Image (cartoon, rainbow, N blue to C red; front, side, top):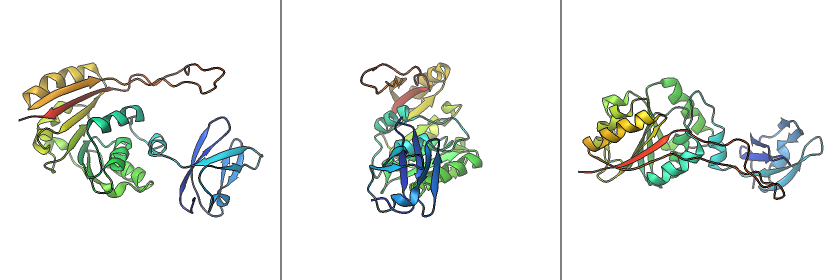
Length: 253
């Protein structure tokens, strides 16, 4: 049931989506007319709601994917197509303790927090206070900030946590953090990197074995969407192609 303060995803007949927070006495304006948000209170997710112009919208429950797509950003974000694979490769689960370096706007931070809750913790490092604060605000909007310790700190000085279950690094010079990551990881545990360029990947492939890591995989994930008209089924004109290389390894003794 939808309550005051809940998030709702409004979907137009053409599939255009609007993420709103339900409040009493509030309406939400769209190109298809205004929608009375008060009328959603007490209703079930999935219902139809009519705009002031007589257009029917669906009110559905948003997923973590919907929140991540809409984070307020000051930096390039890690996209859902990469995030899902990262979480599986790092074996993120409830109770996991995970170090993230390169908080940015918090898209991956949000997914990590969602994965480790309610018993785990994410330790998210960024040198820039304004990025850390923005990520904190983004996670607070969806109630996930409790599961993250935001640290404004140069990770080249070392990570403060020990015996963590996974590390993920998204910075310009990741090779400078490999030794610190090794010192913080449990033996056999995974580490991952997002690398925009092939040069970064090539360099890390040389560094990791020298610093006590077994390289397991280097991948690039491409996503092609299809139009959902059953009579005109074909790919979209644009696709999400290169967003970065993902490199994974494990700490060895």
